[in-house]
Image (cartoon, rainbow, N blue to C red):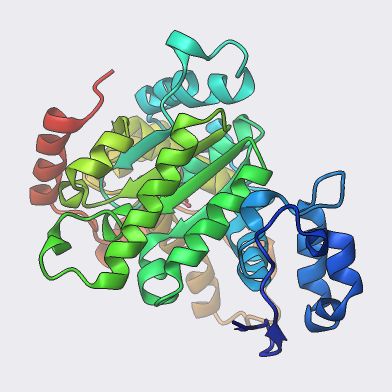
Length: 360
Ligand code: ADP
């Protein structure tokens, strides 16, 4: 059995038998295989090797190109988000700190009765900061962050999703502590497909649950975070494994004010009074964090458009030629940027939260 390499070259599979002498990184590198592997792939594998030069057991059966894909595309070396970047969500931050960050920082204290759950579900409307929370957890807990969208496993990696999942959990176990963030987890662990479920997506789901079971039982320092806008589609098996389920709601008025101030201040464009900020908050009831970001973007185009209308050429335009962003800019932007979540949808989340959410 031979598989295709990164640029279509054939790569012999890595044999699974640990006792096999041809299995060490150095011997694999010195034989014929060396020619077949791309330099970048070799580098990836080398980094994952133990001090003895051996590739960890979990990675030995896997195709190098999948390991490379996980290391280069899914693993984020610098998630670069801190708690302070996230507006509001105090309740979620507090729960996550206790449940996830402390155990990742102090595994010696969090065992036995205090052993943490390994699965966390963040659910709620789109654009409310679920991904930001995942990244912040990795940053605060000094963990490696892996991000994958479950729908890409079923669409982009057709027929290979299962192998990629194994590679993902395999690389994560070499990079502990690790946080695996699975966006749109409903498309992987949905209950709907049970009857006419496609064989390959059923296998993918099984593989995923097996991997989760594996690190849940062991002493691995791996946390799985699933995010979804459709929690009602998760089945019982998924809920059982995602023991903590936190509702991430739309931002409060204070949080919306914070997002506006923060984004404008970053660019030195903030000159609004408290009353004006108050008006923006009243006008943006029902906007998500991501809607607010789009609104600020659109509003901040106001001064630029005005300067250009006055006849200044874009190539000649200086920052000083532009006035600060005003309430009127926001009022204009509100015509363009509408809230992306409907009131009906909110009811569904609140119902699900009452039934399955972790309220404390
Ligand atoms: P989700 O994963 O819930 O769909 P994201 O975390 O990807 O949403 O948020 C998308 C963008 O919206 C972020 O990059 C950020 O700019 C903005 N955003 C959303 N929620 C917040 C928040 N609570 N605080 C600050 N910015 C936010």
